[in-house]
Length: 170
Picture (cartoon, rainbow, N blue to C red):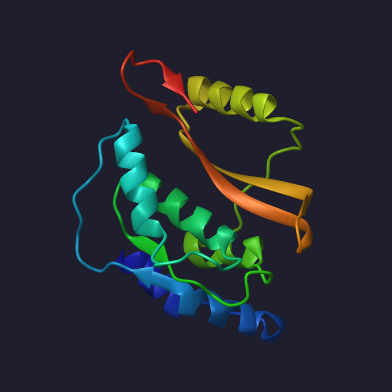
């Protein structure tokens, strides 16, 4: 957790990005004491517990899905509850994923390619799990219409877990 604290505090930012970085820093909560490690193969219950920890609010209303998904991805990678997020601002004002990535991971995460259905996403994730044992992914759904808000983008996590029959599923 010390590496992320120092990365956030020493983050060089463009003047154009200063408001976005401030919003991210204001919403981000970092656990400084060592936490119990989750197992390498997460169960559904482990994943639910991690997701509850990440969403550090009583009522989730804010447009910070990018930050929530990055926090969960970071925590899964480290197998600990380290990062969580509070509400940021208006539910219609999201955060820039490139800036969130740079703050949390130190660099912008590699983008994949466009997939057109949940079935394609699931197939791609299981393929990556089979080849490289990657188990945590951030999915960006773009160009969909939400009531009142209009055209949106939403980030969420997809995680491979192996439980009862030891068969991986998303």
